Image (cartoon, rainbow, N blue to C red; front, side, top):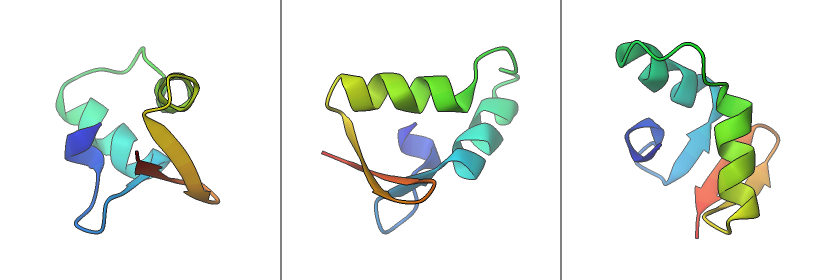
Length: 54
């Protein structure tokens, strides 16, 4: 997920999906990964479809 984060520290569904595709990971859903990170207190929603690291 860190590789999908831009230079301002923002993570998006689109950027995460691109990074997962680079690693040939298609079975894992980006929404699920981000949701888990939110639950664990790693990410916080910063806007519609955007998250920041805590």
